[in-house]
Length: 175
Image (cartoon, rainbow, N blue to C red):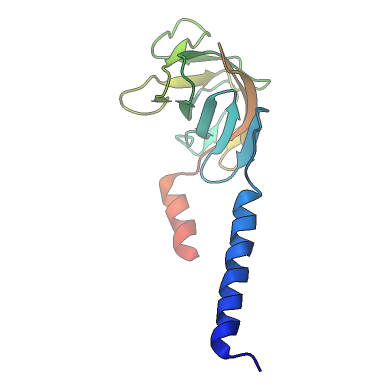
């Protein structure tokens, strides 16, 4: 008969091995653009550029009408050793993107310094706005957006329309 203490030790070792294999399964080099759906916005990466919490701001009256404009929020994280620049934002269902840095042009020209994060919807960063939206959008719908960087390359995501904070809190409280 095997003592209880020995069974506990065997169980702890097996549990540790199982956890280690699960962690190591996610390791590897992958330079292909990736995208994941989750949280309030989506995430994507291309080259050394990470895009986090990509989303359209919640519509002021609950709906983006055809022809309207929407704030595009994104955190651009340059994990490289060289400066990069967002040189284009395009998509099939809007006519262009403008920034407060360059409102007369559809060329966003937003610099993203090496090792830094640039937010497009914060008080200290540039404001990025999609103009000429070609379809009616409400909370939960999405808009296909392609980001083009000078060095990192191009990545396309489906940017969701954010829910108002009150609706988000109501859903969270019900869980």
